[in-house]
Image 1 (tube, rainbow, N blue to C red):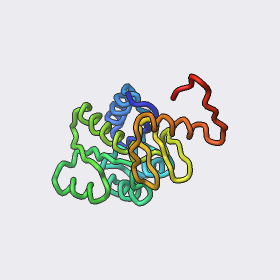
Image 2 (cartoon, rainbow, N blue to C red):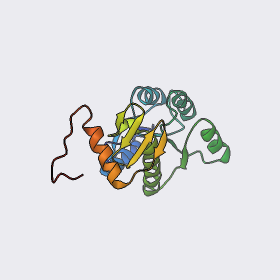
Image 3 (cartoon, helix red, strand yellow):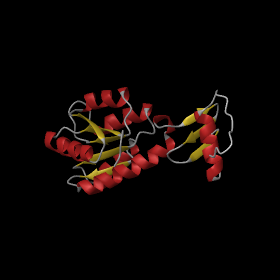
Image 4 (spheres, rainbow, N blue to C red):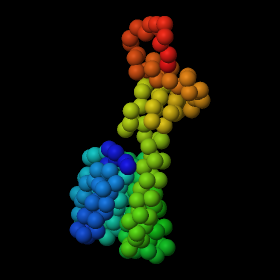
Length: 184
């Protein structure tokens, strides 16, 4: 089950929006719903979402316009377009405007959930600022993924080295004394 992952649903069909929101909440996601493009864009730009589900046919601003504006300011937030427009040209335009994925309605919720999970997992590896990352200068350690980087370059560590570095980073600024019997 996911936790603390926030998804914005921009969908003007009340029934669809509520069903998606309810299903995602049952899987542990936090959701917020916007029923038109202008409100959706304002929410997308004003908040940190882990993923955006975006309909194309929206009042105010259409999904292509919302996607394009979000991409200008938030290049790494995954966007999945959900729409009844299933022609190849529609899909190509969606991808050209910045969508990461495109799912044609009607769709199976399990497929949507699988696609969401892929993006959440992938985006989690490139957005350490939203997690429990430990940082000192240009060194970053992610206890969840067990990844250590310096200047964006991965550093391979043994499990013992990782635990030691994690311990030191958690205790930075403190004097650490090894006592007999203490093990890391």
